[in-house]
Image 1 (cartoon, helix red, strand yellow):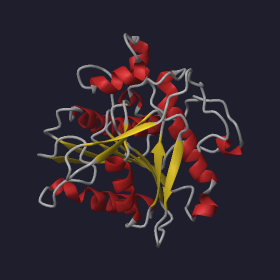
Image 2: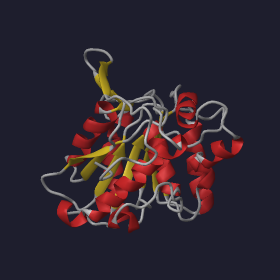
Image 3: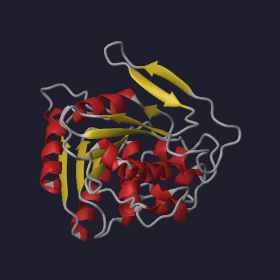
Image 4: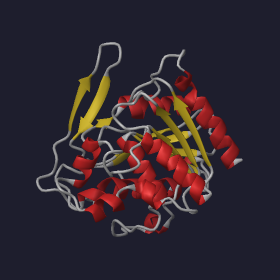
Length: 284
């Protein structure tokens, strides 16, 4: 559990946990809704490298793609030596107060708990990154630029620890909520109807990239019709303008929401190995 008691901004009525299987028989997806208790699921490697990854599944802030961008990602990266923490975060449209802050609240608390438990988990608190997919990429991007935001009241000693990740992996990530380059569903579920332009900009992480933003790794398919590739291209440009180390991989085909499920013939299937080598260069 992320919090010892109720999470911030108690929902009324509390959401009711729900899950369903979606997709074709050969590629079934567990979708979670009604997250009343945000949690971390920990996947520990047989031979830990000392590097931790906080993984944020996508789902347009409507559901969590728990298997495709959670479980399968964790198993793949755990095999490479990472201690992986899959973030089961609350969905902002399920009645929570301060809905636009809800996912970032969970991400900030999660990375603090990871650092607080560094000794127990055999990780280096100075080598903790985040990887996010689609709307989970928006969570990751928001955490990357949100070190100065106080979005919940401290509850214990863990909340004295820093929230800035040491690096960020953004995979087909929503990096802006400005139209037309956003994913409208993510924007609507996070901000609600008719948000002010100030709120849209506050929750558009690409607008807040600066020299303090952690190094970033990007992957996007150019045929993605759900989250525009411009989200990654704009993050790449913002990092370069701010002098932030960045690596970007743009693949011709792959669509959206593929997680680790691309066929071996697709160059994008190599992203876990590329991400691993990039992290090794950054954390050596």
